Length: 104
Image (tube, rainbow, N blue to C red; front, side):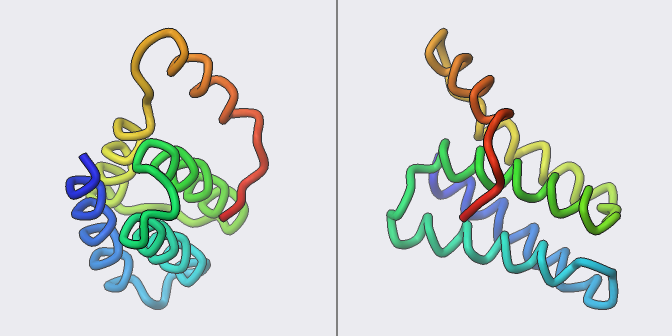
């Protein structure tokens, strides 16, 4: 799962780099690169990192009025799928993340 998430992040970074002139794109790229770095250095597990990345990207898009392209939205949806914990405790964790501040 970790390698799959890393691949999704790499694909997202590649797509985002093609929109270098888009307002707020630098924040999106920074978030994606930080997430990838955390995964590569085992700072956080893949579910928690996917959850934080999903939240932060949505916050960045909202705050900067950044509109993702269709292919970027599909990758964001894949990140969301990685972020969904399994079981009843996972459901509680997913609910709790909607009530947190964005961060790194």
